[in-house]
Length: 190
Image (cartoon, rainbow, N blue to C red; front, side, top):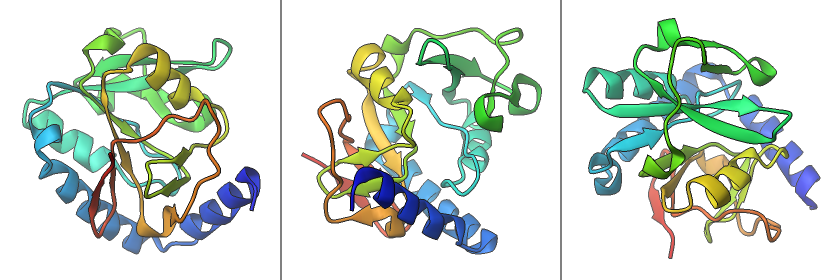
């Protein structure tokens, strides 16, 4: 399968997952992430805000904020083809519908953070492999962000087991993950 067919196939299967099952698996993924030393020891972390059938991050974001963790979430600048991290303290007051209807920080009420300060970036995606390969959604936003603005951050992808394949057809610009966390395991990549 080429990249577009693989992405379409996996996303259709992920979308077909029952919401209750997706919630349960997301909770298991969150528990695994929260037990990882690299995550526990990190200062500032960037989280994606889940959309459609992605691994749910909002419960985890709220929990981390209650614990006093420093978090940021990305604002998508479509015309500039960039992600800009903004500090998040109160999701209910600071997030608004943005690119593709995804909840994003309201730049009128929150401040941006220096991407170089990010110690962990929690990354979404459509398809992953056991070598750390990742297919996003086709826009390249996270690939550019990781390569140019947060190259030192630990990259942790959250995915359901059904999103894993033997080999993702990666391209030169695709950024490799350091960890993939699923409902069944934590995969540490070389």
